[in-house]
Image (cartoon, rainbow, N blue to C red; front, side):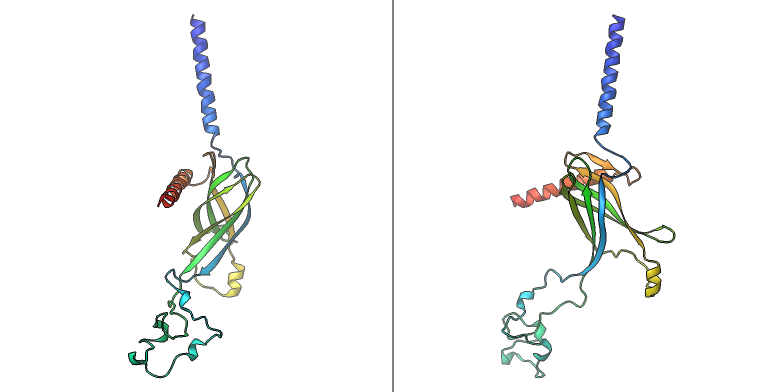
Length: 231
């Protein structure tokens, strides 16, 4: 009887140990991420504001130079052309000038990462950093953190994009020759990879809680999409 009980206890311990191994095996923390970085770049973009309406630009048979359409005659309400400067007239006026544009346009920096999925399952999302390193010392000059979601099957590639108002590096202006000599090294650092089966690859040297944040953000995005469809 004692031997039978001992056998049952040993079997139970073995099952618990096996389940523990399987539970930890769901998430991978191998040193190399299950993907390959194919391309990394950033670009600066200047965009018109959302409330800018280009539809009021006149569409006649010939292009009228806005500078020539401004009359030297003071404008009054009696001439039917409206008041104010030509740029401030409404779409119903006879103005052939371009609509008013803001003095300073918003600047965005678009960061792109092209990857190939080398895993055996589909990728759901990636937490990644865009790094700028000093070419002489290897010191970190700047780091931009992003979350991107794009379903990428095995052996397929995807381009992830994220925009930011922050420039790549906040640095003092230097001469063109000096800038060429100190051009920073650009590198991508993968923090976490989320798969469609809800398992993850974790960067063992990465930030703590990144995978949890990646998962939670995906849940919030799905809820917003669902609410938008219902609305």
